[in-house]
Image (cartoon, rainbow, N blue to C red; front, side):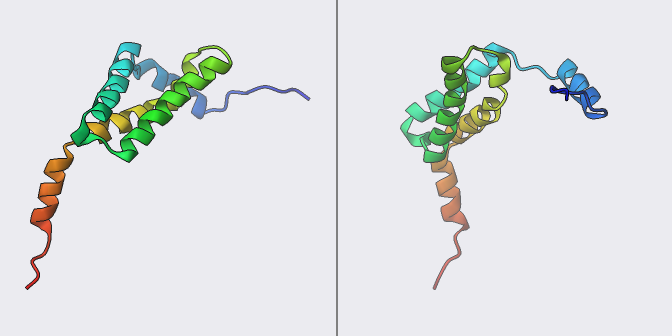
Length: 108
């Protein structure tokens, strides 16, 4: 019995074409992580969801490197979490709260 991976079409071609066009440079990813961290340091934009997403992204980056060795494949699951953390911490929660107050129905 032979073990290992085999290329399955059409998925292998799809992933190959995707890798040729989509690229996230390391400094841009670092900027996204720092944006999330900066948002967590600012009191008005701090949220539990942002903290959870940012912490999860950092843990997904640090633990595999501490256990094994660094390869770029360990970054892939952390990218969506880093973007989510940056989006959750950069938003203006005070503006959203004021908008929610305006949208409340008036009770007599």
